[in-house]
Image (cartoon, rainbow, N blue to C red):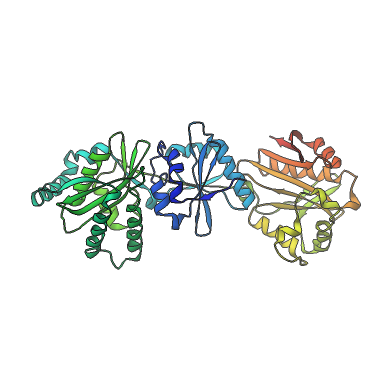
Length: 467
């Protein structure tokens, strides 16, 4: 399993290796966003199959960015690693802030998926030339504001900011807070505190800083980062007492740092009415969508309840309260279950109680993570077949165990084949897989009779059945 490392300032250079050429054009695919919002996103990263994979933990939810490939990156392998990680952790796979250019790839990858595109998340993306020139009738307002600013402060000039400007920047913050219009807004105060921290990182080579000066006084500043053909503006602040300074700063910054970029991304509006109004007034070329993909498994779509399956000798159906004694005996048969491959007792995470295993099976189906079939002979539970590890790509794993008193009669093969057929033809899976320990000749024989062998390693033989 891949190890994810929390994003820190020291990781900026390694992340930039991927972000500097990334063409997704969204602010989340930048070092600045990862650092500025790390207390909210809790981002952690790993390099997988030549790609940067970022895992975010927002509240109690785990979500992944779309993988960012390097020169030899394999996006499909990185996505498969994300899916495997989620299976092992028992969490739903969620790929968020997916750029529009990758949406079709994920739609083709997942047979069932819930997709959302929230207006509040969308980034305001502008043509670089528009913000450099403010040409045309639609920008007459910006041009008038700049003209008034230049008339009142004719000597104001734009200069790059570096780490050596720390004292000047600190004085700017003091001036800014003195006239801060949202001083009573906790969210705005928190964002301001983050902006201050970011401006202390001007020593990092991937950040571009610049400001408008009235003499020696800094009156407006911006911090940005180039990612692919997009200049991403992380911070824009100005003294409100200098009328017209905002469009003047926007134009000067685009002119100073926009070379080589087609787009300028001024990020989202966080549902702030004032920000939305301002960003729209600058005439964005597009509001870049950020899709959220939540792959669904087939149980969610096609299994309202556990069905009853019939074979020549057996009936397979949902576990009932009356099955609890026999089911507990099956699960707690340590000698028999040495080939099961899963520690049922350890998996409880607590003491074994009479209803423990029954409740786990019930909860797994309620959450549509697995379906446990009781294998019955003349109404008596003699085993179980479990379909689990749904990969959200049309596949799932199948396991079967039979009480030792009924072993050797072919009941396992019969039950296994019945559930596999149900999974493929009623649940609409495309692939059912299974495995057995190399030493388990009985299971090897059973699986070979109804599935195709497709690999092995030092521990297991692997099998699959396809439609």
